[in-house]
Length: 195
Length: 273
Image 1 (spheres, rainbow over the protein chains, first blue to last red):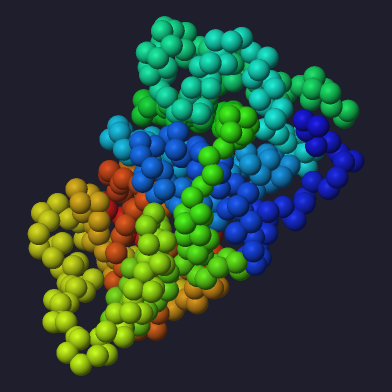
Image 2 (spheres, helix red, strand yellow):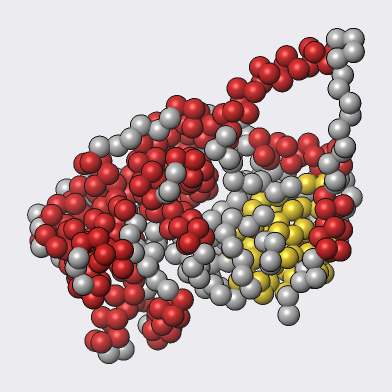
């Protein structure tokens, strides 16, 4: 199911792995590393210049994750998505620092807490379904979104690698993600929901 | 707000989620959102994260080296599965010994090397106990107080600002100062009279407000503890670059610190202007 609907299994499920980490339960940290280590490690390898740099980045990411675990909201995203969100933030920060480009303002921490329960329920996102939606986009949009999200390439780098004009790269990424967002967050019935 | 503005906000939110937002665009987004804060959203960031997880899983994940996984588990703060961070333990021990302290720094990748070094350390102890085995005493490391003095003496651009206590009970008798060098990206905090903390209950955390950043998200300067000794000196080691600091602030946070403070308990501030 794409979204969790009212009447389904409890939304406030405190038994998830990140919740156990936040509570300091024995074994939870190890389980979390075992479960999400490969995800974080794989992303770090793609977004850093060396294995050593990736090792440093992964440790910083997990440090961030321990601090943020208590803010994970299962009604807003999957656990893997939350871990990927924390990892992306750290890797984006590291890339900025590395490049010595003017550093950007930090991305807001934590997934926004919705203002009411109904909104919170309807905004849950699952990785698999997002991927399915992206697969429905035009090929060119899929390509540039993939290069941006996974490889962390700038718009200019994507233009250089693909031969697609810079302006088209930007518009394809924006239009593609805007379409996914619209279908995820604004059209609950479109994806087979039963609310 | 016009439709054109809404479209532009969406463009900028996409760029922000992908880490492609430059300073000019950041300022533009801030200005647009000031007209309608409800337009701010992390939807794109959530989507990008979920897509990241899905695409990586589809492509096949690389297995994290076991030594790295072990090191992460061992250094996890306040986790029931592992010991408290060595950095924190070291900090406490150092303070008890020398009335100096260092904040908890991000763990290093070579942590497991240190772990395996236990064996070598044990062998060294045995060797030291043997007749004639003790090597010459090395020069002692300068204390944090000495390092602080050196920074002040050597760095022309260093700033030194006294702490101003808030009305928080922890800061009633607190005093001290901040010494900071932007060019060297390091500095020291000095405290006297700040309430002693129990690290398993709460910790102090430094935040550095940077003029070039969104003031909602100051730079995390790390967590530290205050023991029962007198004056305490803590090194400042921010996780990201601080370009133009405007304010140093100390908050009370949960053990291990937080990524974004709710600023419920601000105990000390030191404005640079």
